[in-house]
Image 1 (cartoon, helix red, strand yellow):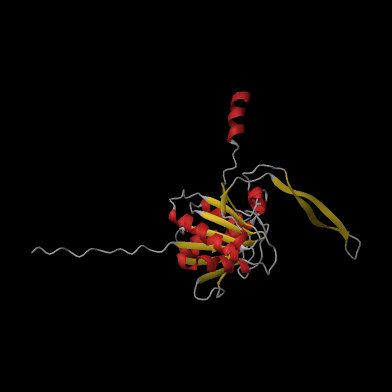
Image 2: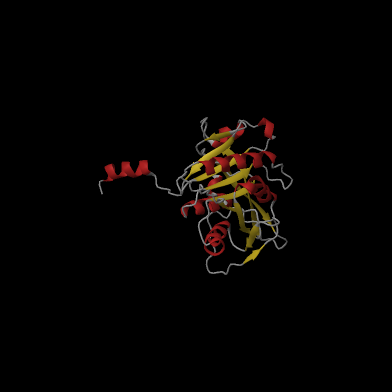
Length: 266
């Protein structure tokens, strides 16, 4: 009787997941994101050593960067970085991983990054930087600025979103902007794919004076939604959906480009 060779079994390597944020490595949001996906891959954390909110896509030029190992997440590999969220992604790929991770996750941010906020957000800029480097990415934000915020629903939907990403064959330049309402998990209606709303802060600078009589300014403002569409992130969040907006770093207005090519005849 002819013997058959034993079947070779192959164990699929766990995906490498880079996690960063803009609120700093000690923020509750990043701890909750790590806990949400801890078992879905090899987790490596590289995050700022201090809050970097509103940094946008800033990078450190002309100043040194420092990076130190951190024990914030127990046995998980983690580093704090003196730079911006974008610096964290760049250093993680070049000096820590020495390869591109399979996914990059940023957050969970304390406060929303829907509509125009995506432009200013350090959370989202870290995710966008990953996409520029051909690493599928997502930024997560909870619409609650409180240090005591309840991240139960955010953890649930961050994990669901990451599982969708891992199970899909994504374009390497994919980046998602995910915002979660500050509501109990049982009241939320699920993930909803949306477009970015035209909504922004109508800003004002409050002028005050220091003890020497010199003026200084506090930025204030009111958030105003100018977009009444029912397919936007603002609408979704107002109706207890988790908004998911695919975004891109190519800022070209292709429709305008085509029109100008015809009308300007250059």
